[in-house]
Image (cartoon, rainbow, N blue to C red; front, side, top):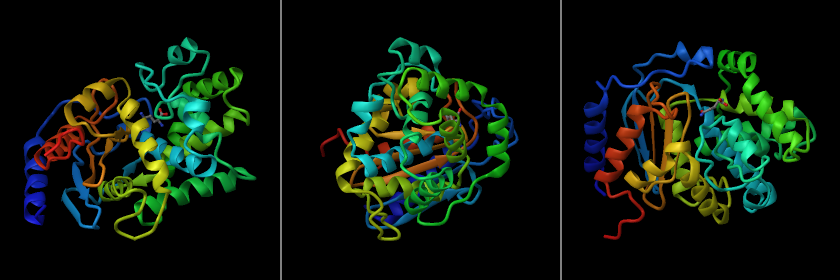
Length: 310
Ligand code: GLN
């Protein structure tokens, strides 16, 4: 695909959707309400390491739920991909990302690593002797996907840690049902910290590009995760990456994707490109309005739907 064509499609997407006024910043985490709502950036990375950007790809936002993908991939590296279907679940819950009803329905079984109960259970499985060791592994793993050393947005972490009673309850309920076998409050705290990792749109696109390239970071050349675990990672993203709107998203794009309430979305067209966009205002399901539109537009213009045969 010629560079000029890709760049033009990104520019068009930026122009078409930058004036969209729909949606609002997440405000259940107080620090997220303060983030500039006008941040809008798009980035695309090809398996041969070309990076295309449009708009604001410098501003950093907290990664939030997009971290669920990479912590899950880390546990797959440590325990094998089957920890997910065997231990956490891989079906869509059809409920909002922090649903207690979803837990109650199957007593904490049949969760999905892309929604909070499954994600906290997944974080609780990261191997390590101490909280510090577990945390360092998570941060380092995310950094290798991004191809640079990522850092935590401390005000966001503190803001969420002070107000995340619901996630603490989710962690404890998962513990009560036997799906977490270490300290659930520590798992929730580490999960909260992983959600506070700062990223820009370029970082997210490199992370997605690594998944599009069988686990090999196309920019740094580093093998970050084993190719064998990538198809399962993408499948799980497809089932619940956009939570209760995952079906609508898949119908429109065919792309495994993951959103975060910080306003980012990553999507993967296997073997073709990784793409990401950041724009903080969210729709009712908690997915960035502009990022969804921009990624859908770019992917469809570039033939990114994996179900389409040329
Ligand atoms: N840290 C957020 C939470 O647990 C992440 C949610 C999200 O991005 N959907 O509520």
